[in-house]
Image 1 (spheres, helix red, strand yellow):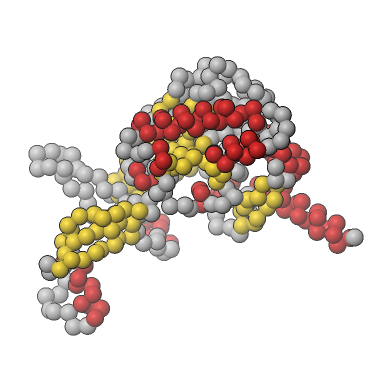
Image 2: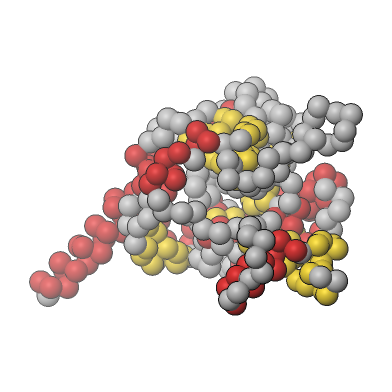
Length: 352
C-alpha cells in the first residue's frame, strides 16, 4: 500500500481494515461461513464481520481452481462419492503449529464434493432448473411413485448405502453404530426382518465440514431395509420411531457432549435423495437452506404425532395422506410422472 496518506473516502475506508487488531471472536454462523470479530482500530473498539463472498463466475477462474489448490485433505469416499476440505490458492498459506514442529495448521476455505464418474441424473440434479410445486395423492403414490421407487432398488441406486450398512465402505467415517447387521441380509417386503431392526449407524452428512458443531449435520441409517421412505411408515411403527428418536439423541450427545438434546432437530426428507429411510440430525443453529425447506423436511416428531392421530388399525400409514413438495423440471419424477399427469389433465379439460 502507498505510504501517502489517504486522500478520499474510499481510500480512508480501505485503510481501516488492515489496522484491525483482534480481541476475540464473538460469533460464527451460516454454517461457519460468517464470523463476527471484536477488536480495535487505533485503540478504538471495532466490529469486523467477515463473510465468504460468492464464487466468481469467470470461466478462467473456475477452470483453474481445482489445479491451484494449496492443500487438499480427503474426508471420505464411497463408490463414486468423494468429499474433501481444501485450501485454495487465494487463501493465506498454512503456518507451522509451533517453532519445533514440521506440522502446519490447516485452514481450509473450501468444502469439496466430487462425484466421479457422474451420471446424467447427477448432472440434472446439480443443474440450475425451474421448480414446480406438486401434489402427491395416495393414488398417485400407489400408481406411479411406488413403482418408480422400486426401480431405484432394482437398478442398483442404493449400492453405496448397502456398502455402508454392511461395513464394506466408509468404516472409518462411521461415528457411531450399534451391533452390525448379519452379512448380506435379505431385503424383506414388509415388517420386521431380524432381531436387529433397532440397529443403526451415524455418519456425517457429506455437506458438513465435520468441525463446526453449530452446523452439525448427521445421517442415521437404520439397518432394517424394509422401509424405503416415510410413505412406508405405519401406525405399527410408532414404538420403533420413538425408540429410534431416543437412541439417536443419546448417541449424538454421547459423541458430541458439548451438544444437548434440545439443541438437535430430527427430520426426514420427502422426496429423499435415495430410497432407504434415513433420518437427518442437525443442530438447531444450522441455518435452514434447501435441506430444511418447507415441504421437503418433515419433522420426526410430527410424523409420529400424525400416525398417532390417524384412525384405523396398525396398518394405516403415511401412504394414505396427500403430500405437497417441489421438484426440479429436470428430475425424473417431474419428467416421468407429474409432467405427463399435468399434460393429460390439461388435454382432458380442453376436450370437455
